[in-house]
Length: 308
Length: 308
Image 1 (cartoon, each protein chain N blue to C red):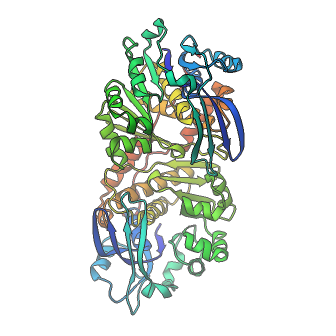
Image 2 (cartoon, rainbow over the protein chains, first blue to last red; image 1 turned 45 degrees about the vertical axis):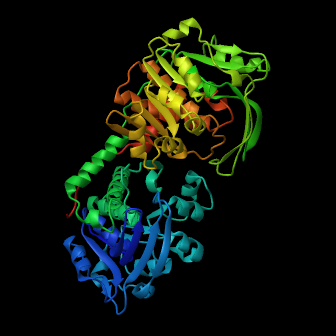
Image 3 (cartoon, each protein chain N blue to C red; image 1 turned 30 degrees about the horizontal axis):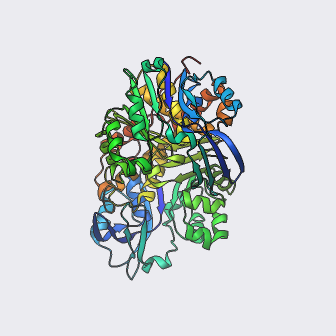
């Protein structure tokens, strides 16, 4: 089944200890759509300005991403600029220019109303609600959000949380939303707000999935070089949702594999600026990274043995 | 095979957000020995003062721990006192009184010279070296150390690292010892110093094993209550080494399972003060926690599927 992705399309200017890139293709919908495109057909809903490089549109098209929902508005494209510190865990935003994204409140192309799998990337929860109202009978909706909305729009956020199946957010956001530092208690509190599937992303330490009575912990992939973490979370979401949409099933086994595919795609994303590395991926490389996650985590049954 | 454990036996006064305990049984050799006793016969080498509560000796005896190497010296037992902050990740040492431990430089009982599995818990690397010289032909020696020795005694530490098979340390210590922040590079640098097996402990995020060409990532066990983290690292080491000594094999599969048993024992240790919880464990509980780690990490093979 195809996946509908709603979020930002941006031009990022990023400085890391390893280099700098100006006006690189970025944005949550971009990262998620390109990642998901390795698994299923993707429909992208976003907005760009009249300064958007046609080469970026071509890149999206090269992944067979349906761009009927990509609006072109008069003005400049959303721009974000940031710098990463030495260990890449600290990020400072230098500049945010919403530009055409300030008025982002999309009318979906009518045929998108039949979408079954939906990823609502991090935007204003009131916009997320209005998007959701345009979809007839979604089968599985995943939401991303951030501290800005948790603090600034708690009521709309709670409303949409009652209507989504899955929430993906990072650990500090989970603790803020739940009001508790303990991850198990935070997960229980968040799932009581609505989403039955919860993925808490922990950066270099991986991700934890809560679904039904189960908890699944995926490790972070160890890399010799982390080049640019921008977009890793959205790339994770794209791999996760793309795999689920492709499978068309939501069993525990499928959710666990989806977390590993999300982690695998994210581990590629951080190896370069923008979508450079993910753009060039092959299915063979993704399958090899999936097997590397197996090798990283597998252990055999054991009986207790010995003198005692 | 039996396991020789060399380290401190202490009386800990600990305050956490959940309570306080005075003069509780503690020390690296205590935590490691009690944990290892569930897998194999343990010989403990340490020193206590004449103030040491006979009930603590009885507790160790109840785990069939061989105490011929536990010296009783005139004076007071090593005492440590600390307080944990709200989230239990920050620990402040209030007081350290080495007392009889200041002169710890053990002469092993002659029959201990035949020990094949040895855990040298965190003490002065010069003392660790002198202990190692008293063992004829150890088959597998694991070492723990800390930032204090990495900074204060780099030369003796490097000498003993050339003579041990395994090093267990936490991630900040690994980065300090290696002089690099990247975990893969740090592991390579440390293994170039000698130990072919390296376990980097990451607190609530679990542990990573480096051995031969392999990397194995074990998750932290998620708990609703972490009561007192004191001794978790030594308990991990005890479970790890106890299992290996009991198995008598050092295959990759055995090393991976040993990491899980170490993690399992540590996950119990933090549920109470001192060795309270681990002391009362049953083999059934340990086996159930091992299976819980399997449930936490298992995922099935997957083919890439879908439209792409």
